[in-house]
View 1 (tube, rainbow, N blue to C red):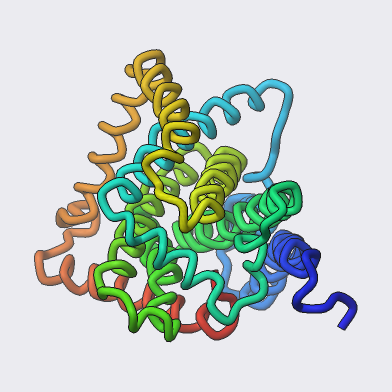
View 2: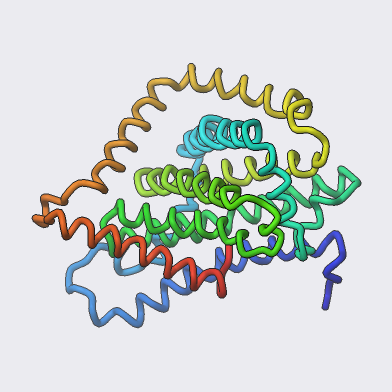
Length: 314
């Protein structure tokens, strides 16, 4: 081994290499599959269909004209979605903090940074690790499964499939032996939270075709949450006055400032979500066809999760 598994460098290097691998592997995979399936393509098709790898890489594009908008969306997602949701769960279900840290660290040296007594080492580790996690989780769940999946399934089916995979990827900690010491609804809460967040993020990327805001919000929220875990076993409420209360004040200010934009986004999102449970009139979908479609989506999400659990776990 180049780096000992118990070294403080092990976790950051592992997650950094994993992020780099995903960024490189997904476009290569898309190129190869596109080449293999080329004979199935129509004579006249869109450029994105000709080169899905190029379409995928466009998700990462930052320009001088769109950077400020992407950053604003990332900040809004972080402060309007992630931070309030985590705060509510930690406040109402403080036991989830114990469950989360034990699930992440039990028999897993990759997350030893959460147990690191030196704050500077913890901070440097969490920055590298959670930036990397944000990159590879968003690249896989939203950039690949949701975005590329929408080329083969109905858009909302791709949203549900990717979100189900994302939620189940976090529910998988249920299989950690430590879960036997906790109620079943702890991992169920984790699943529900990530499933709902996954829907929001998938709808965003399919509408805006930008992945940076998702990586930004996801990574920084993980960094904030990691501080809650690092503070364990100290009580959450006193700690929240220093961490979450200032952040929630910013959330309120942003909510008021961008209320019209948020209201519009929520309206569009709910419309899209409701469409999923309605018969698709364009293809004359019957009620029984709709139920079959939903069951197939669930099956595909489960199948991807099972494959990912053994090959590419979240």
